[in-house]
Length: 323
Image (cartoon, rainbow, N blue to C red):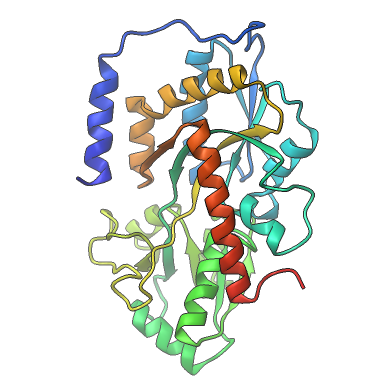
């Protein structure tokens, strides 16, 4: 069954749940607002998604969830700040994109992804792909690859930052196809999309922020990186269909600094799990073509360790590790 159908079933299941009083840990947590750090600029798909999630979770916590944007470092600034400065009291948490697990193996960082976080809940993952300007000469993904092979180093592709999944995936494609192109990193999808629309880059590797622009005829989707074709673009092939033969997603969840009280973690997990399965939130995910990828705190921690090992291996294979 497609994830969309699963999401609908989950929504129906949640509809009959009896409302419960906000959960509390020993000591009355939470007895003041909780801050959720979003490591991306306001207005992008991740920001919009997490604001909906935070608003619903606040009802289950009985306290406001304040969103704080900390863009930079390819989505790692938020997690880095939480690891370095937040008290382990549960009042400051952050979204952890995949780059937080990857960057320490590419350059020196202030955090260790294996030791410096308390994993709360895993949420979802991005739907990613490649687009060009509607006026570009490349009508298909194969045409773009052929041009890149014939003109090494001339194509510039925008991403949401160095070490981001779009960056690493484009370099993996280049390695497979024997081509060379140049990354231009930006702070988020809104900025990178504007760069493509302004023709400051020829190609954009990004997430669902592309979809409204492509549907409006301003951009042309060439390929998606999901296992199956995106519902919004049934005529756009996947990497699996195009000869690259792999899937590239970028899963994410919420975490706090190391040393959090398990009872506090449980309260946060339970509130955000209820918010995750709320029909209004499921609709928000559906609007940006992202699936529910729920994992509880223990499963998320184990999953994070596997992801870290996989990212370390891929970085080494691509020759992008620390020198």
